[in-house]
Length: 133
Image 1 (cartoon, rainbow, N blue to C red):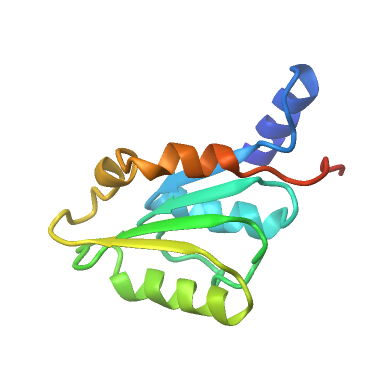
Image 2: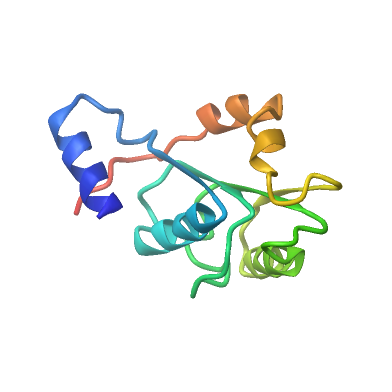
């Protein structure tokens, strides 16, 4: 359904289709992994905060720029899940960014979204060409 909403908006409004970004926290982070796997050449960048378990292992869409944020002792989402996905992505040839915080538990988004470099990094990402279905 989220992909249908994105498609409807991009067809109705003047949107730079080379600059469509996806972000999510926890279950939304799992959704980001799923969305970039579903459309590997669609998103300009992905930001994931404490992405929960999903069928994606991290090697999908390795060319989509990705920044993953995790807490080292998250009681909801094990840090090993993020570490394993990032390692898998790097082994597959991807170059994800990974930031791990200490002492913030599952609310890592509060720190990630105030990370000074995040807006500049996100808006510097763009696809080389338009995506077509």
